[in-house]
Length: 126
Image 1 (cartoon, rainbow, N blue to C red):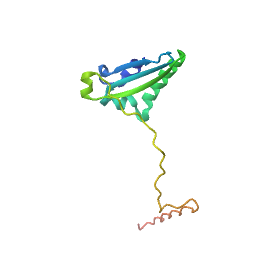
Image 2 (tube, rainbow, N blue to C red):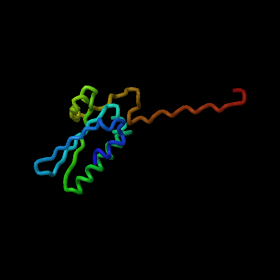
Image 3 (tube, rainbow, N blue to C red):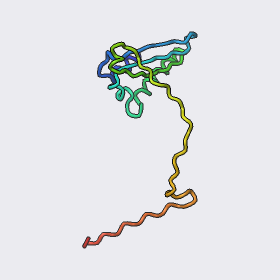
Image 4 (spheres, rainbow, N blue to C red):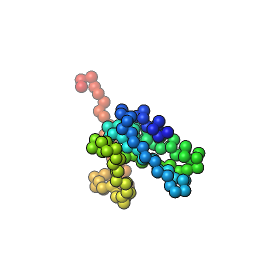
């Protein structure tokens, strides 16, 4: 199913590698995919819409079977492609929230912003 959903986004469909791992109690499934880096933009889509849709279909199908599914995307460089080994991207860790730098020129919450100057009316001589 994952192959069926992803191949339309790939220029070279043979570059798609899929690996599946099931938990011991068969309640969780991890699907890992790897493909050429050039296709990454098309697979993910604008704002990640395509990959999110693929994940949603995968989760819904797994839910029907009484399972939980996760889809991980790995990148492939030309060197990795010869060995067909997925390259693991580092896990995303949430960084502590940092506040935005303060702009001392901006009005504070207590001050109201200055009104914008009105444009001059045009006359026939302008």
